[in-house]
Length: 357
Image 1 (cartoon, rainbow, N blue to C red):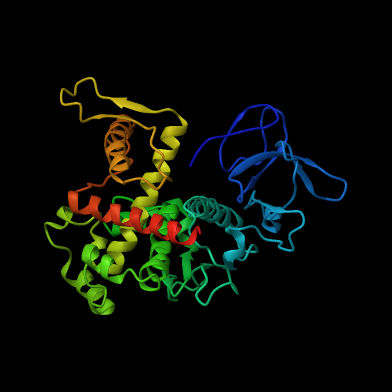
Image 2 (image 1 turned 180 degrees about the vertical axis):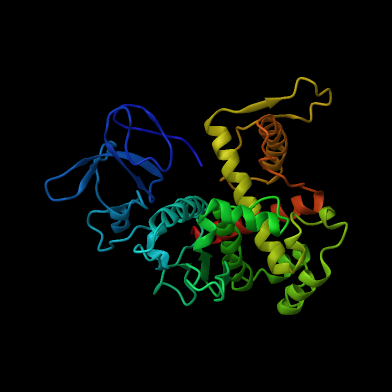
């Protein structure tokens, strides 16, 4: 993610801002251009961007629920934005707390789509592909003995349990499962990794290359999952995997690695926006040094990205500990994991180069 600037008064803005606190203009995000722009209302119900092009837009229809600040071109027949058009099931707003939960979910999902669009990845909606990317945001049944909603992916359909938007409940689940990290954004990034395995690896003719890095995806998934929960994980899993769950099956290894690729490039883009650099004064080796001036969305080699990320993550973890918090990035990037991350980087940019014309 990056910082934005109000085109009217120059105030720095964050991605989720809906109003400039300095000049008072309403704000909207233009996904096609990657801009957060100030707007002026027009007599015909549209909004004129205060950027030089002066283009006119309408807000996504979900803006009326205060869950979206994305814009749709005024001439477009669409009523939903590039992110919201993928929703199949949204929360019942008649239930207490549902609107707040939906807003949290949409904030995470919109950050996901910011990255997918920046990376030039296909995001087919319903009716645009045989296997579109669609979302169900589901609440658990009201009876305590009913089946719980599980977050997961199934042929392009990603289900997010509404309970995950409750910070206390999500923390309870994280602790119960022994996870170092669990967020809504993390769920989105992991589950969409399964979608892009189908799209870029299986359907993209990259099975052989992927298997050389992640192993045999033809292993029975149900049996692998059963073994994972019954037998646990190998003691030396950190030598080759980004997380314990990644050891379950090659599909989960890919999805976990995909999520971490998005974690890393998003954090580094923001670090670059703030001009962050790291130079550990007590370090005589020069290894804990980095300048976050790497183009994480460019097609170059992955090595500069990881070489920049490691010192910055070390510094951010250290700052978090000063506040009595757990590490911001509580993961180890072993050489095999870096190789897997590099494969994801190559896969994404290989697809971009093959489809850019």
